[in-house]
Image 1 (spheres, rainbow over the protein chains, first blue to last red):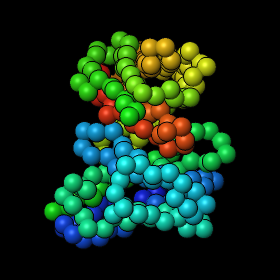
Image 2: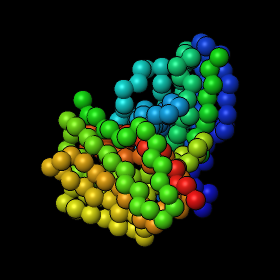
Image 3: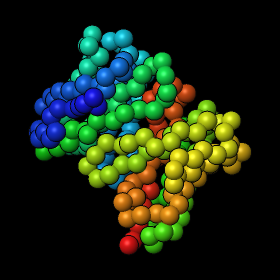
Image 4: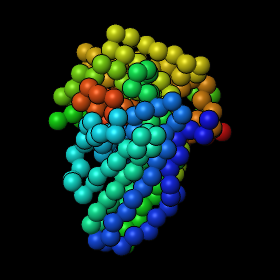
Length: 113
Length: 112
């Protein structure tokens, strides 16, 4: 079992650009959540996808959008990048019918210059 | 709004001692609370989940308590080892659903 995988590992963009991050959930998991973690802070919930729809959303602007595919993998898109978007982006998967623990991927480190 | 508070100062203890980390929450009555471990540059790893009707939960050298009156959870590591050095995150559910609200974490440093 490969666990949760994310790509790319690192990414450097400039202000105003757009970025797409990818996540494959743990085998058997159907729910994917995305988090943003700034340096020295805890992860902040962005949104959650289940059955290819956004089910919950945290306090993030519409510049942050996502998608879930039929195979449960997911993408996070961020438009019009700001310097403040520099962070570690974490994907977590869980099984909707089961325990509440979440399995996190290694994250994508995004740097906006 | 919901607020999760963990001691932002690092906790330094000697190997073999018990580490105790605190998580306080306000404007919130979570049905359960999770604790995660995070090493630098890596994603959090689930450790324990405790429900509101459970006073205490144990797993090997780990123990978590949940006091809904004090709105506080305590996380204990007994017989601590240098390998326990990491940041520990407290995480109740996000508005009662399956996503999580994380505290800022407490960094634990165990000295040999």
